[in-house]
Image (cartoon, rainbow, N blue to C red; front, side, top):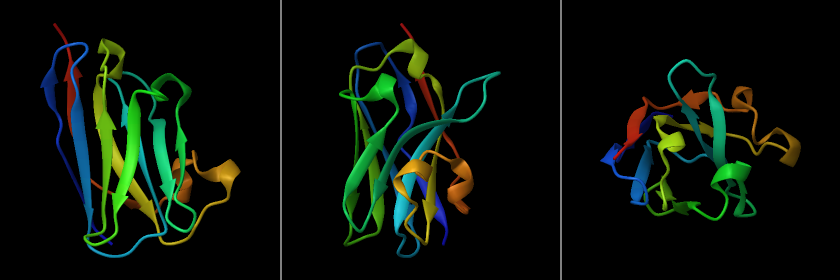
Length: 123
């Protein structure tokens, strides 16, 4: 499965962006991770196909929404009320199997990764 992420850009604090991740095939779970300069990759959000369950990093809960379009195997990350600390390269990742709840935040559970898309939040 190949993943193609898009939608990043330069926005001001408080603005919104929607990231898209197009998959070449069906996947059972999809997640978004991000990596800020000089920091480790961080889990942002995940969605399990079988249950439509969603999971979020605490600091983005209520601002970010992960969703899926099954007709075209796409997953989206709607990001509202963006803050400068959201600045990072965002990566989508996917798994052919459904990770257990305790593992959805583990990047090792996702064998498929897209290229990153840069999100910069700055005034």
